[in-house]
Image (cartoon, rainbow, N blue to C red; front, side, top):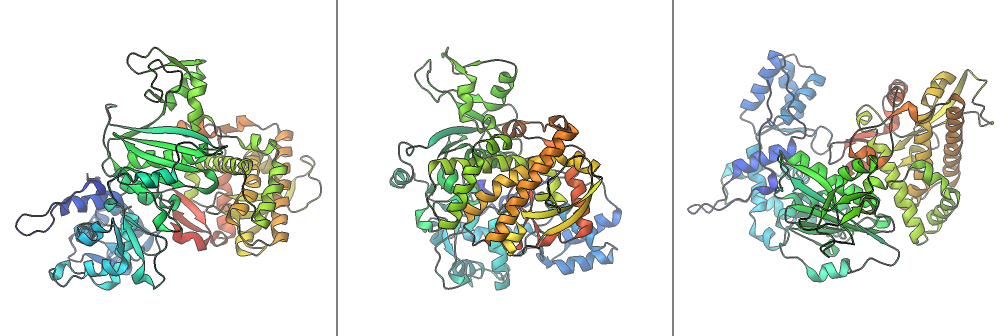
Length: 619
């Protein structure tokens, strides 16, 4: 029986020098912490064949600190394990903390680390380096090489140069560091990483004033949510080192993503920017995380950041939970608006029961607040539906976005708001299809090959054209590859099957019709106009066909089942019954096992995505 090893979070480790030797101690804690970060899934709770356990023991008892993947395959083959079973065994051993292996990372998939303490020692050299500490966590790749091959250290604590890129990538995987922008162009040796645990502890007031004025810009809204961290008893609890991880995990939103000197972060806070989705201030206040977003439409970025914090807390700190709350508003019975906190899930639940007001939970305050007003700070209650966006002057917005794509125009408030709301709706759709992502792509458009007027009745079979989309860029493969045939297939569909799938296809195609002009304008890719227009028209036609089929068949919302929990409340979206997407994935795999060249990757939350190969390195 495999059990899950209990470990300490990597970032809570504060090693102290031994009084006699001067060396830092606490390597066991660091080893366990690395194991915790590397292990992402819960205990398996099942038994396995005896020879699997024998292989596991052989790997654990090996004197080698690491082995090439081919060597592990060879060992397993001696025990009659085929390659597929070996990969499964490695996943299990990783989950229970026996070893470290990232099968989906191109830089790490060919190495299996058998001794976490060996790796922890290498990491501790970086954390303990005085030069790196003095530099507020900035360290060049050349300096890392010096730390990992210091002639003054014992031979067992020196590492060959071939491992340095692997160590650096592992530090990034453990949310310990990221490579900063603006590094010198002298090659890999001059690249610089930020060790987030070593950022300054002093709040940079001047930088904050510059990046976060007292009031939002004209036309922007401000929304606030608080991630309240609690233990199993509901009491406030500490997630040590949370902000170190957030600095790394969210660096794609950093103010310094183009020039690191523009970054604003410290040990208890950071400021982020996501272009048209707005700007955010995250602060560690007591044990909680306060997230404030300013934007034409703050809901999208606020939802993204809240979800990241919640996932991180509940997956890396055993026994801790993250309650999403909103602060009280005026009028306040104690004239201290913001002091009272209201759990969003409860507000939504009580609103469903017909309640209009909710009493303040602050002692001595007799004020009851409007639930609707409180939920104005909660994206959980405000996410737009695809239908509402399509009805709100979409044709005009699409025309303006196409001008933006062609002419690099400046975004005005209305366009920023529209683009952010579209992205919010898209995120909601993708959340309803998380489980299906493991087996194949989730984004595709479908349209009849025959462009004549579609009659939902009077046909038995039709040929449809399927086009695959990249889930990173939210763009179809023909645009990314500049090839009208890339990721495009034809399939014969019966009327009965199309009627069954029509509600799902209506939702999916409607979302993609919104996403295409937004993504194309945001990425500013040099697009072939004819291919772009063909895809745009195909989406419109496919959406109209699905709508007509849904109406004719009388299929509506009753064909869907709501997903439980806060995310279902947020999205207003539902997931398809009948396995429509899975059936499509099975057909596609038979047609093209390569899925048009799309690559399966995992994001920081261990969610699968299917992306164009040029974006694989982003994960």
